[in-house]
Length: 231
Ligand SMILES: *Cc1c(COP(=O)(O)O)cnc(C)c1O
Image 1 (cartoon, rainbow, N blue to C red):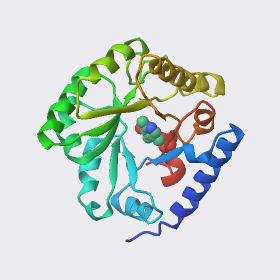
Image 2: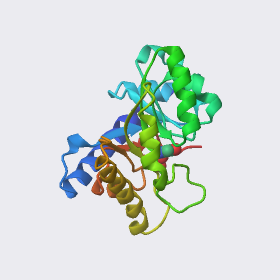
Image 3: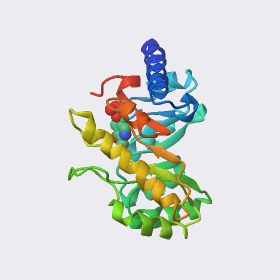
C-alpha cells in the first residue's frame, strides 16, 4: 500500500461514537443501528485498509465501480451493497457481484434483477427506495405505489425484501429532513399492517444521521465521515 490510511481508524471510531451518542439521545440501543460505509469514488487500497477495521460491507452507487474493485479485493470477503440509481442493463453485473440492492425503485428493474439472479442461481436482500422528499431530482418510488409494489415483489423468489431506504431532502433546517425520515418509518409501520415485514430502515448520511436515528433508522449510509471528502 502506498498510502497511510491511519485516519480511517480515527474516523471510524469517531463515527461509531457519534452514532452511539445519537442512539442514547434517542433512547435507543446502539446495537440496533448499523453503519454501512459508503466507499464510492475511493480506491481498492482505502477499502482494503477499512477491512482491517472489521468492516466488510460497503455501499457503492455505481455498478461500474463495484466491477473495478471486486477483482482486486476478491480476497477480502466483501459484501457489495448497491445504493445508487440502477439502470436495468446493469442487472447482470449486480446479480453476479452484489450482495444486496438498496435502490430498488421500479418493477422493470425488479424483473430484470430476478431474471439475472435466477440465471446465477442466487437470491439477494433488497430494500425498496422510496421518494420521501419533494425534490425533483431524488430517485425513488412514489409512496402511493408502495402497497402494490410490495405485493408484486412477493412473486419474485430471488429478491428478499427486507425494508425501505430513502434519501432526505437537502436543507439547512432539521424539520424538513426529519420529516422525510419520519415518513419512511410511518410507511413501514403502515405496510406492517398489510402483512409486509420490513424490519430494516436505511436512512441517514454523514450530514443528517442523528435525525435518522431519532426517527428509527436501523442502518446509516456513511461515506464522507469515514473515508473523507470525495474529489
Ligand atoms: C454517497 C451516498 C451516501 C453517503 O453520503 P455521505 O454524505 O458521504 O455520507 C449515502 N447514500 C447514498 C445513496 C449515496 O449515494
